[in-house]
Length: 107
Image (cartoon, rainbow, N blue to C red; front, side):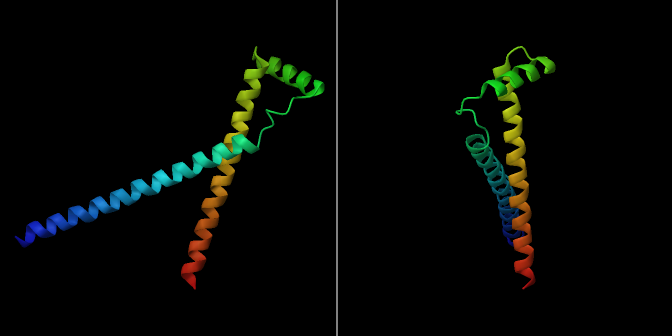
């Protein structure tokens, strides 16, 4: 009887640890997704029309890169830039959080 209770208790503890890990990873993924959406909203200048010089440069660069559609090239490049910005913000937030937690536990 005691063995069954201990086994049940151990299984509950294992499930709790697994659920904490799942929640932890889910929250990290949601943080990254939110940062990516913020970078899409605030990093690139798509609503602002490009100047003639910028348009010529975009067409030239897309042709040199082998893309036939300059708009698609622009969207791909800006998506990569947004992804880089979100990654940098994510890494900075994680490092600041770790620094805060370690400095707080040292007190």
